[in-house]
Length: 254
Image 1 (tube, rainbow, N blue to C red):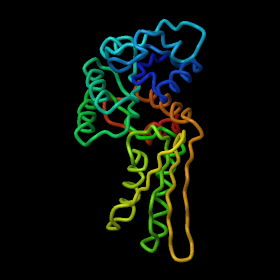
Image 2: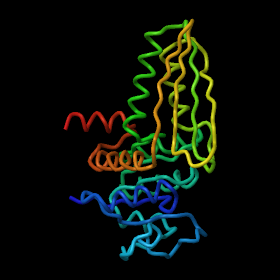
Image 3: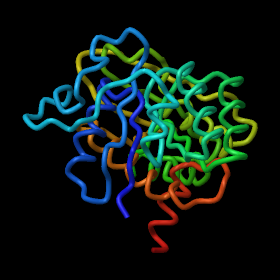
């Protein structure tokens, strides 16, 4: 059965990447395109926004409930404030959600957790398969190398990214700190320059040697593909809060 996506933040970099890949994948369709009030593309056909010749008959709208009524799964890459409002509306309407928005405060994350008691929600700062493997590799390396190695993180993104450090870097820091209990916080260095899609490096430095674990995203398609995998997972999942480890684990068992 075709899964109709409601793409929130549809005109942003990630929204356009998801929209383009959705049209190329027969398992999905674009049910609705959602943007913030006052956005210049409101009312435009989403096909035009994506630079396509054909008319999709999917207008860009700013009414979340109207958009959610036209789809099966909310895919959210907008602002933290909008994300909370959208996922709350989705929970009320019984629509599962995939959230890739970063920069959520503790209060906003709590609101997402509350919504997940009613519908399935995948919340992940990075939906790349490789990055989620990096979390596991970093944890394993820190445990094996022990306290004699210092750990720091360097991350780089395009100049337009608003949050620094990135949600992925914060998650890496949490994973590493948990693996070396009592080692204190892990320093994170953020670079914002050019059009870098997303680079993350874990630097583990000890006496006379250094180990670096690096993931580089060549473009945003890698995140968009992960979001589509998450949408497939969440469509049939029970209510609850999930991350990409659940999505990838389910795919591995299929």
